[in-house]
Image 1 (cartoon, rainbow, N blue to C red):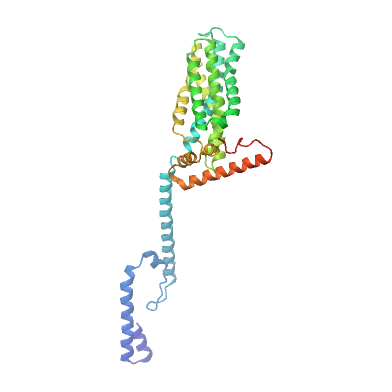
Image 2 (image 1 turned 120 degrees about the horizontal axis):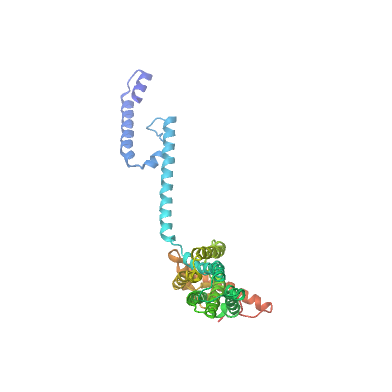
Amino acid sequence: AAVLTHRNQHHMIDMPKMRHLLGAALMCAAVDGFLTPLMPRALLARAPLSSPCRPPPSRHTRSVAARRSVLALRSQEQSQDTVGEDEGGRQGFPPPWLLPFLVPATGGALFGYDIGATSAVTRILGENAGPLGQLGAGEIGLIASGSLFGAMAASTALIGIGDKKIGRKLELNLAASFYALGTVLQVTAPSLTALLAGRVIYGLGIGTAMHVAPLYIGETAPNDLRGKLVSLKEAAIVLGIVAGYTTGAIFGSGDAAAWQPVYGCALPAAALMFVGTQFLPESARWLALRGRQEEAVDAAVRLQGGGGSLEDAQQQVSEMMAIANKQSEAREAGGGTPGGGGGLEN
């Protein structure tokens, strides 16, 4: 085309110039034919189509190239998102905070279950004379409030010795044990005295669980989920109440002996709580506040699951101990008791 144009303009053939133009055209064709297959499609789509050897691109060509570029970028972003989701799913399920939440929440659910179940039991015992004999209003009132006496006793004792001498995991074990033992005594009670003893022991589980559950959840939950998980523990109590009323409605249509399975349905949950506690680490914060740094780091690593590292756990424990030291120094400066509450303790 360049040769013909040159010929039409000058009406004569200049052989040196013609050889020069033919050589340049052949060179451009060779370069385009050799490099184009080697270039990536995304680069070709984004690269300008104009060159010294090509005519300027048309509007249609430019729009096609732009669409190809956008599609290539979208495909790359989707592939990256898919890879990220796959990696997150492998590392994040089940999340490491799930079991440390479910076990204490089960203690709250058993508390709520006792409320609903006892309401059904007192109704059944008041309407029917069973193995315990004909019970008066005072005796039924003792059955209803027996667990509250145990809960009050456990809460009072744990205020003094719970935070200082008993770890969070030990408290969870005690709560599950009290729940299970109290349930067995209630179901197998041959007399009113044995039933009341079972009620008090079950109440010890309530007081212990209600003391440790919010503490353990708050100390082990991630920062962005701490408030939600502590609130969901309260929802577990309500769920337990509903379960207790439901169980009472199912077994409350028979004779007076039907109150025993109402209480007995709490035993599987208590057993699951005890078994689940064995897989939990101790609270890293509780260990750090007592100067047990190595144990605290091990607990923090376990709480992080597969997505954490030893360096992150060590940093968390160091921050916990630094905060505890500052709180202890502030109390000492203000005339408080050194080593109490949040400071480092032996």
